[in-house]
Each structure stands twice: as C-alpha cells, then as structure tokens.
Image (cartoon, rainbow over all chains, first blue to last red; front, side, top):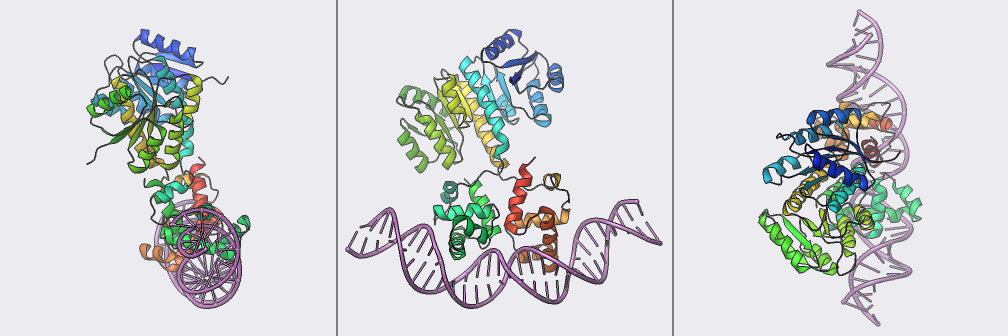
Length: 208
Length: 208
DNA sequence: TTTTAAATCACCCCTAAGGGTAATTATATT
DNA sequence: AATATAATTACCCTTAGGGGTGATTTAAAA
C-alpha cells in the first residue's frame, strides 16, 4: 500500500487521540502513538514512518528536541513540532533542528492538515534543490549590463559542458555567431573563460 | 539596520493591520501592506522584503498563487500563505509553489510567529544547500577509477574558474604538472574540457 | 522615420588548454 | 626488498577557445 504513515509523539493521550483522529480523517495512516522519548526512538528504528508529529515537552523534559536531532542524523524524514510553548527560548532551540513546521496549540484542523501536506511535499522536493537550473532573471538581477535571452540559451549549453561546435550545431547557427555571443556574454559577466563564466553564474544565482 | 522586513499581501485591511501589529510586536519590520496583486509585484520590485505573508485569495481571485510563482522565479525569499481556505483543491495548488508555511485563519500569535522564525531560518539554511561545495567522497562514490586528493584539489580550483597558470602558481607546482593532473582527472571523469568536467561534477554530486 | 539593439556571420590572431609519451622521485604496500 | 601508486616534471603537437574589428539583417523603440 501507498499510504503515508505518521508517527505521533505526544505525552497527553487525549491530544494524541485527537491528532490521530484528525490524521485518519485526512486519509493518512497513524503508524503509532508513543508517549516517551524511548518509545519514539524505538519506533523510528523498527517501523520508520514517513513523517513525525513531535511534542517538544514530554513529561516535563524537552525530549522532543532530542528526537528531532536523532531524526536529522539518522533518518531522512520530515517532522513537525506540535507544542503549547511558543516562547522565544523554546522556539530558538527548536528552529535549529530545522523542522518542517511548528504548530502551536490550540491548533485547527485545516492548519495541521495543510502543514502536513506541505511538509511532505517540500521534503520530497528537497533533493532536487541541489544545483538548481539557471535562471535568467536571477542572473540579470545582479548585473548592470543585461544578458539577452539568446545569450542565456548559449550560457545554459556552456553550463552543460557543450563545446562551441556542438552549440552551433544544436542551434543551427554558425560557429562564428556562437563565438560572438559568448564573447559578448563574457564582457557582461566579467569572465574570460567557460570555467570562470560558470563560477560567475553560480555566484549570481546565489547572491540574492 | 539589520531588521527583517516583511511584506503583507492581504485584501482585508482589518486582518492586515492585525498581522502587522503582531509582526511589530515581535521585532520585525513591516515593509508594506498591499491589497492587490499588482501592488504586491510592484513592491517586490522596488522594495524587496525578506519574507512575504501571502493571502491566497485577493478580491475573489487566487492571485496569491501567482505572486508565489513570481517570487520563486525571480526572488530568493521565503513566503508563507495565510488563508481561510484549507480545502484540498486550494491546498493542492498552493503546495506546488513550495511555501515555507501555510497558516489557516483564525491563527494564533504564537503560531504565526513560530512559522515566521522557522521559515526564515530554514530558508537561510536552504541557500547553503544550493550549489554545495564539492565533496571528494560523493564524487568517488559514483566512479570506478577514483580521483585522488591532489587531483581533487585541482578540480576545486577548476570549479572556481581558475586557469592552469593560476593553479600552478597557487599550488607551487609547474604548469606541466597541472596539465598532467587535469588530464588524468579527465580520463576518470570521462570529460574532455573544463566545462564538461564541471557539468560532470555537478552530476556526480547530485546522483546520491 | 530614424535610431537603437539584438542576432547573425566572416576573418584574423594568438594563447590556453587538451592529448600523448616518457622519466624521476617519494611514499606506501606487500 | 620489491612493487605499486601518486606526484612531479619535461617536451611535443594540435585545436578549441578567447579577443578584436567590422558588416548585414531584423525588429523594436523613440
């Protein structure tokens, strides 16, 4: 089955049941409900869920944070904090664990469901995040002399490691034209070789 | 000043003011409050904030989604949806824009503040993930003929756009040695130029 | 209408870069 | 002690790539 399994870590049984009911109403599966850190870690080892809903405070201790760290170290799944505490000190500690969401009680059904869906989707997309495609807008945002669309097309091919000859053939233009375009682009990027142009592009894409 | 500027896009003035007050209570700065898609886009162009709070429905249209797409295309800032709609159809569309958060009205102060903090922190971390530094381990993981540490050092310099001459000077070795190392590395990477080697490295770094 | 800008192409020059072969030194590994 | 492996260097050859100038065509902007 293709169901999405969610682990609930919450020491107040009434709230845990409440969350569980909500989850199942929305076509997810509750893989387990646990009340302690130990059981949570056990459950992660034996029956890894697709996502974890984590109460930060378990029986007076901030064990939720420790569980979050463990998830980051060992498992590649998203987790969402559900807690009554929204004070800056708690939040500060929580945010360093990079949770997919942070829900403050009392929460509403729509809010939890939305956060779940988005956490799952964003986590799935996270792998694609590395080495994003080039964007003309982002490149030009940091340039005084703008790169044209045509030049950008050539840049993408250079970025993919193509030679001038290959580019000429792919775009049905002469080798001279390719060289001319690239030369013009180098002036705009302040580059003087393919490799330096690529390094420059990487910089422009990140420097927001 | 180092203040974090937040743009509020919300067509109901009362709610917008409510959010604004909350934001300022928590030491953020409201860069502007706008009520329409046009003004939002204008504001993004002229006074880019650090984060955007977005109502999905603006005057009956789902303009918030369009704004979200625009932000993804052109700007490198996080955004959070704040909306009354948590139906699956709306959420489905919203999640494809990869928002940093999705808050369903009525929201509580702690919930919004936490989501803000986490969105900002996670986004900052996310940028570090983009164009990650090269890792010898990851590169070799997918190669039969392994790249040596020395060769990796040279690869890093090529990746940064350095010329052979520059590399020779930086490493206090002869130009011939540089060429030899690079040639050997090309054989391992199945590359035949700097640009193709860089493209190859990108591939090896992502193929996990 | 005139002018500006982008895309196209040609021709020249020249260096950086890539390909091949071979040799030496040092450092591990067996 | 013998043997790989990596790092270092030299020399040769060839070409792809980068720099400069100039010209034509087309489309958009003034």
